[in-house]
Image 1 (tube, one colour):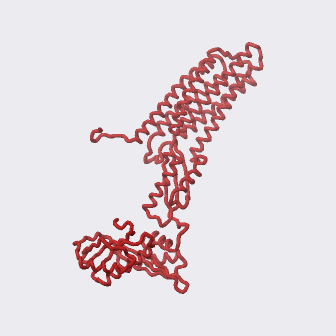
Image 2: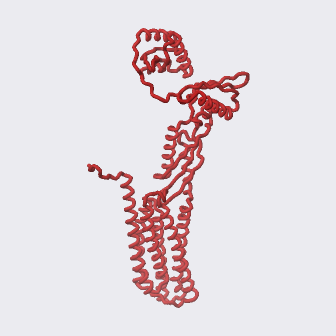
Image 3: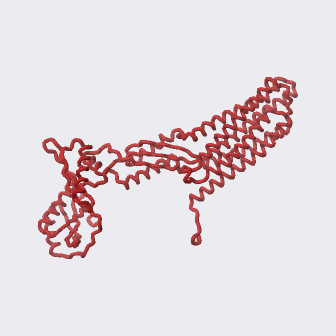
Length: 483
């Protein structure tokens, strides 16, 4: 058990530490391997005079620089986001890959230049394809296979573009080294047989190396430029739209923006929700949208903005509530009548009980104007203003009045729709008498009819007993009347 005050890292922190450790270790191993291979190729290339080996040595030398840049960039890119770099430091990986592309292209320029001179101007340069040249190239191939596989495994595991660039370099080194071996073998054969035209095989092999490097550079350049210019990964945007569209409550998707920094994705998402949706519900839908995005891009940083929109199936009641909700007011008991071909609206609005009559009337007048402006078919509006409680009412005592309860039960018995009335309670709040009760109805009775019966029962109670200030009736289905 950890001691009090000690820091216990959570699972996410441990995973981040493991990622940094793995990436740093494989990048550092790549640097050491590049130093070893570059040194061998330089020595054997100078000894043999082979342009193919020297071009490979230059290629490996730039690979060494690239490996060092990769190692340093990973150390920086793995730093967490801060106040000055709010999206983290992942772009450093993309930038280092871009630099590696430039270095590879510089290698190609030198190789092509030297090959051209040997092919057309200095054809008598002597090449010594000794056994050591072949040994070094085979060692180079073995080391390149080993480190490219390790780099690719870690790059895939942590989606690192810098390590992927390194792995791509070293995997192509295998092919370019094979081309050099072939060139040296042909030159050795030419020297033994006296076939002079085959002596051009070494500079031709060097040109093949340059061609491979250009191809690799082009692939890498496209990836790094796309990342630096925040290009969305191919097909990912449409997948995100498909997944988010399936989230319940999402009416439309207005914008999807994707950017990548290092191995981390950032997604900005604007979704349209019904304007009738509560603030809390909109938060739940936004969470579901984030989860849908992470089905496509796991671990992505997703920012969701919910925008209220008129629903496709809105009726006139929904449109009235939509205007009220936009102003953060609650309207209820909306009634619409058609009088002489014109629509008349009656509604109840709850406002803060601390407002004055003038303040409340001004707010309601503005609300009515907004409703008529948006719902053109409405001719007139009459609003009942209710006070919305802003304080907790303290109950003075609970009344027990068996006689009054019996009289109320007798009144409820006159309503054939009510199967049973139970749990009758009386309270004295602020000197006024409150009554609450539970009534059971048919399971299949419509809510509108239930409300009508409740209203009639409330009127009957207050008519028979004017001392009742407030009546609260809780309706229940007949088959489940004790919840």
